[in-house]
Image (tube, rainbow, N blue to C red; front, side):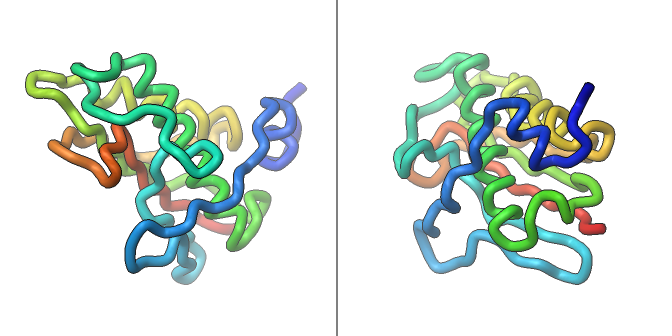
Length: 154
């Protein structure tokens, strides 16, 4: 049986939320507006470093980038958790995903599925969300993916 809270689901999935990544420029990682929490763009940092860099469709394949999108999603959850606690989340509203894409690469939706599928694993039906998956020429620090998360609070 699935655990009843997002925190318990994370434990079931074997996911430990990392420390919130320090901003790489002049911004804050997360903010609350009314009953919503918005994250800044989250990169797929692991222990303060990007595990891969470059363009999807040239330097990385779709599956590797999908894993990185999942990691960026975990980092976004960590940002939300640091501000309000994940168990305060009523539902995930939106993910905006950016994929540093090689010319001709059009698999951005499959890449960002890494983050979208994570939200459903953690929140169940409340993790279903609207989304944009956008191909871009460059991302900060040559990251292959970046994503923003918006959630609604209870």
